[in-house]
Image (cartoon, rainbow, N blue to C red):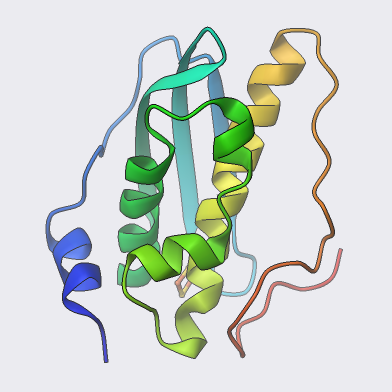
Length: 145
Ligand code: FES
């Protein structure tokens, strides 16, 4: 059911932990399953130089956050903002359809952390392209806001 990549990132998640005095923090939760993800960013010259996460959630959520930290590390904020939940799932060599929403949590955690940083800098937060642009998956959908 799960790819080897998912199992690897679940069993050996990368970048677990916290950053002291982070430049941006994003905490998001899925109200349906109750899982929570927190992402910490260290930002220098508009670039993510370090990232750590803590996830209280299912295996797919842990694997997604681990992969998401690897994808955003070293990226500019603009590049990191463009990383979709689909890109996270593809980097994991796929997630079962009913687990796609777990990767949405990772995308949202990155976005929330970036906007936390922007607001702290006195900048306007970036807007989500569309609240429904997440791709793939059925069941356990995030409710409409
Ligand atoms: Fe809740 Fe995966 S994030 S089941």
